[in-house]
Every structure is written in structure tokens, then in C-alpha cells.
Image (cartoon, rainbow, N blue to C red):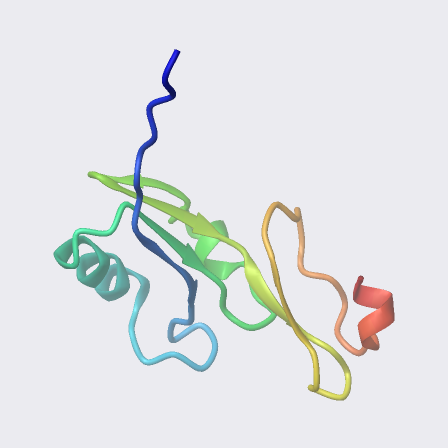
Length: 98
């Protein structure tokens, strides 16, 4: 029995105006759709605002997932976090976030 594979294209690290990006979420979604992406993973610094505003889910043929980028206290380590219910408190060192 041969397996059938699917190929998907997307972007896994995108910032918006909610942190240090320059595009609004609708602008980013429109650009991703224009590029014919299958998925988009938003990861603004230390905020889940895009999720709270309802952007997670399908936008026509584009699936949008919202997580966030964790920055440690020294701003030397950055982690992408998805599936968390809330933003972790700021000021931890990198071992505490892991």
C-alpha cells in the first residue's frame, strides 16, 4: 500500500502591528492569500491579541494559527509558543520559560 503525501506551504513566524511588525492582521492574511499559502502562523512578541480578536481559524483557503514569541528577561532567547491559554509573565529567564 502506497502512502499519499500532501505538500503544504506556509509561513511560521510572522509579526504584526501588535508587536514589531508593520502590517495589520487583515493585511497579512490578504498577502498570505495572494501568495497562495496554505497556512500562516502569527507569532507577535508576548501577546495573543490576534487570537483574542478571533483571527485563529480558516480564512477562505488559508488556515491561521496564532501563538506568540516569548522573549526571556535578557532578550537573548526567543521561543515560538502555540497552544498556550495565556501569555506567560514577562521577566523570566530562559530556563523558567522552558
